[in-house]
Amino acid sequence: MTESYLDFKGLPCPLPLVKLKKALVTQPEVAIFKVVATDKGVLKDLPAFCKTQNLFCEILADKSPFELTIHRT
Image 1 (cartoon, helix red, strand yellow):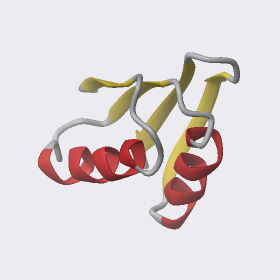
Image 2 (cartoon, rainbow, N blue to C red):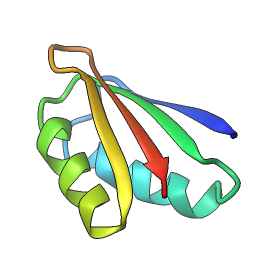
Image 3 (cartoon, helix red, strand yellow):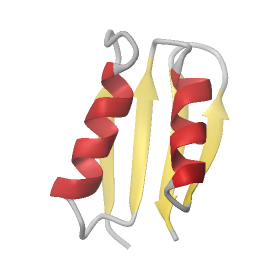
Image 4 (cartoon, rainbow, N blue to C red):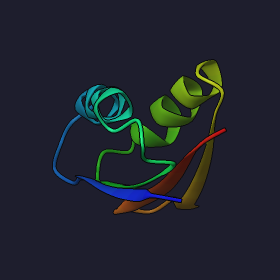
């Protein structure tokens, strides 16, 4: 499984979501995305988006910096 690290620290919402969407399109070979962000909005926005796209999203750290793992299913 190929992994990609996405560093969204310092980016305000909705930029982490916009950049995640771009990564999903431009990196189709990646199965797992490790996300780190400082905007608390990612805790709500990314899981909600993943649910609509049949992606698995796991919140690993719910304090800043926030860490999430997103898996293609």
